[in-house]
Image (tube, rainbow, N blue to C red; front, side, top):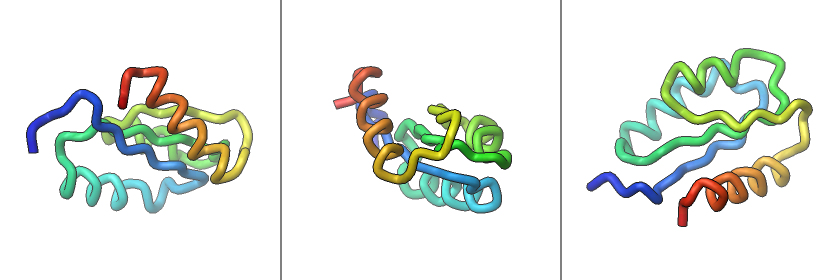
Length: 84
């Protein structure tokens, strides 16, 4: 698949440090040319650090806002950053 600058996958996450490596590895294996945004929903573990270490952009929330807010924020971030 050719690299397309408007391809973004966002992953809402809350305290997913232990699972995020496997999720992002699987994602990169299946879709190696997409950009990845992790919406960190107020995690208190190393979720954001793991995401950055693996090359994802991170949109941090200061507090847990829930899945619906994470999804909405991911869509908003995508539009604000030029993704279709």
